[in-house]
View 1 (tube, rainbow, N blue to C red):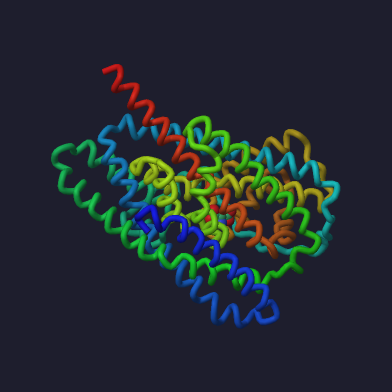
View 2 (cartoon, rainbow, N blue to C red):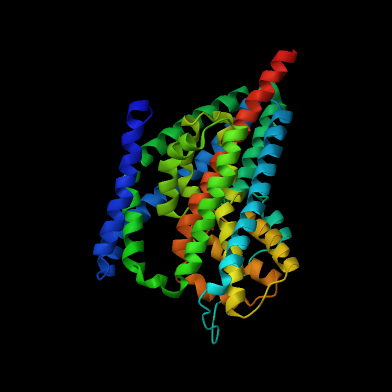
Length: 410
Ligand code: ASP
């Protein structure tokens, strides 16, 4: 996979896996149990392998990235740029979602809300999320695959190594070597992605089929238009103006990771492939290995769009007209909620409760969209990971320019 010649066939292989998976799903529509019994386990196996490799990848790649910067100020500079990019694009994403949902809301089918039940899993408050980011021991974050905690741990050890200077040489060499080994493990797993993608998508199509869309078809279409619009506007504009990469090159280079995001509905599971794609697009390794794992955990533009669209749809079903200030509240809470959303399938649905509560909508409304959440999720995850990649390219090129300027001044 490492060499250029194999690049196009591999992207094509994943695409074929996706198409064949959809086809097999359609053929198996009357036989969901066959898809679930014989095909789904391979998808689960593949997703498990990705989740298994993701903790060492995130831990070692962030530590290695930080240590190789050798300068706490540089880490700070990249960190600030990343957070600013992530927050601004996410707020804009909710805005696009709200705008489109408002335009179409009169045509939404108003589903009955009578007798709706949804046993809400409590979404954590902002402070709870903050406290939860900091691990109380070094083992639990890894065994629980709590990515925010793994990131915090990696940052602390990276900072410690920089401060320790000469004395951390052996540690730095170990981290760098462990990072390389983890990447090779990841490469082995990525090689079977086309089969993994096939096995993940087939049961989803077989189970849901086109029928399930029914009265929710328009809500889905609105969400997908918003997803596409956000990617076409925001990512095209930022990668071309700030990273000097043409949108065409960006999106074609990102295709394998995007297809992985679409079929797995997991940002964390797509991280290995995403790392590979952005590095091929020209992002610096030290930046990508810091920005992408962070993004897979906190940057969720697609989730934010989905939360905006669903909030308007649920309000419409309850005959509630949300005021401008309520919609501004949604922008704020959906941005925060998407930060707190884990990069795993279905996480955004749970966090939708936080958005609904903030504007006084009943959380039972979630039951209206639960049935087709996976279909929303495939699109929103694709947007989520593409946003991470755009940020990695932008920050990487900005850093390159900053360093070139510094060299000129010196
Ligand atoms: N599945 C999404 C992701 O992994 C999160 C969500 O459910 O919105 O990015």
